[in-house]
Image 1 (cartoon, helix red, strand yellow):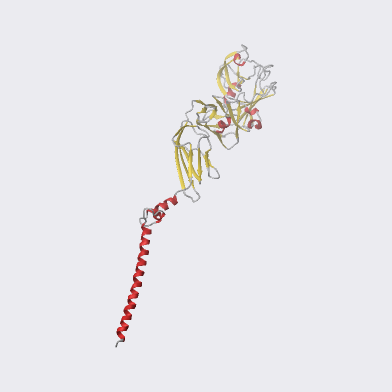
Image 2 (cartoon, helix red, strand yellow; image 1 turned 45 degrees about the vertical axis):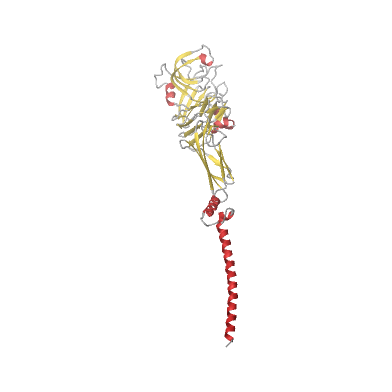
Length: 421
């Protein structure tokens, strides 16, 4: 009977010992929880714990935004708001820690400036000069190695030049001209930067043909193909001279498009010995006309000459071409200029029987005509009415040399190799 109490005491003791171990276990768990709460809650010195925390989501959002920001940096030169910017060499866009993917430069009218991004994507430069006194907007985009974009925008205004130049051109816009007509520009100021000026002139033809420019001195630039134009060719010339620095401190001011059409082919061949002129249309002789050319000591130039002016009636005075008072004819009919120096092909009512028989002029080519030019059947009138600016007149077998290429629109007397040189 005493066995039970003894057993009961033993049970209580075991229970008491288990209870002690349980409280210690609870205290240890509580300590771990408090430590965890302290670590998550953070204090004033919690540092990176705050950025990584998730208590309010702000730390995680900031880290995500930072990871999305592009490392690429775009730089536009000139800086935003710049004024009096040079029209050449000043505009440039660069990218660091990334590659340029888009660069758009526009003026206030929305006209874009052509340019090119380098192969490595580090730079963009314009393909042409900028216009003077013009405001431009630049928008540039670059991507870093992760494909993240960075963009930059800027506005600037180009300089307003104090000194300018233009080019007086022939033929006129919208005209129809002969197969020998070059496009000729005479500049109002001598050009010392011919490469940039020539680069700013674009010529397109239909059908396509290679057209090259040639400088005569520093103030004249002519363009032509290797051979005479084909009949029906359409020529379009863009003069993008606005902003081109033709010489130090002197800028072009033209931005103009000129178009002209080549008419039928007419090439007339003057034989100074046979005293005839064969008029050829599209390669076929349509008329042979008796003529007179320059007499001894005043011979007519040889070579290919282009009709550059036409006058129904004009005055010819020997004093204007170095012949003193030898002649002054106030009513020369049907006159067509062949050289700047004063060679004309014209109607003649005073030479008597010279036509086809002997040379009697002071260097011009004469065709029989009547005073006042009223007779439309006279050779002078017929040829005048059958000709247009740009037609070719070729003189051969004269006792003088070949006309200089710059004496009139006569660059055809220069070989193609020299023309392009």
